[in-house]
Image (cartoon, rainbow, N blue to C red; front, side):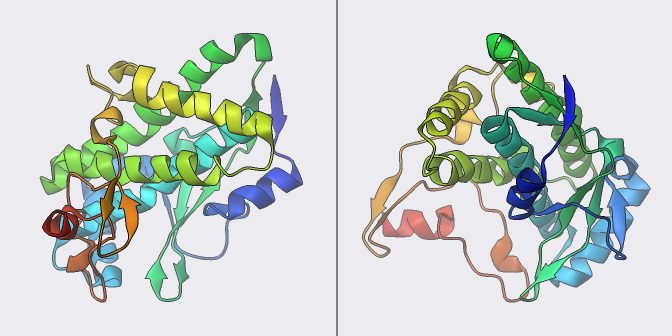
Length: 253
């Protein structure tokens, strides 16, 4: 069944960098990033905006921002039982800044959604996950990795940390008990059961390799899931080490 997002659902997604209208700002079709020349040109511009040390740092931060496309999509999947169209031709990345930080937003040309039929949810969810990762995120990630010669390990973890945050923080604290239960089941499937083929050319699920038990860090007095890789945020102007950075946390632990 094909429907549209409701006004309230759109309002909810705006919090996760969903751009309901295409503003009069510089926008980039995601499909254009499959072309090396276009991707390189974009990263060079972003490098200047971030005042990053080099293009490898820029590529890493770009994929951290790209992770919010996954947040928008998975929030819609788990909270609304609706699948957005994240075909690369359908998404425009819109330059946006907040408090001086580069935080691009995502505009969907076609906002129609596929609605889950409850009796077929498992199959629907499998297809939805394949569409997000294998059809959309993996081609961009693969292009970035090959062009800039940056390990996919870093880029995948940049995406994974925001998916963990969505399910372990945002949706786990939802007021609706049915939503909490459904999102917990979706998260378990995403991390522990989804086969690697749903994420691209993989045998192993790339999200599961970064999932570990949080550890208590004395300095922050909190439980932290320490990253396995560094995203290089500290190598941008004004950037610092992330609270979960292995360069910092392993020294404290």
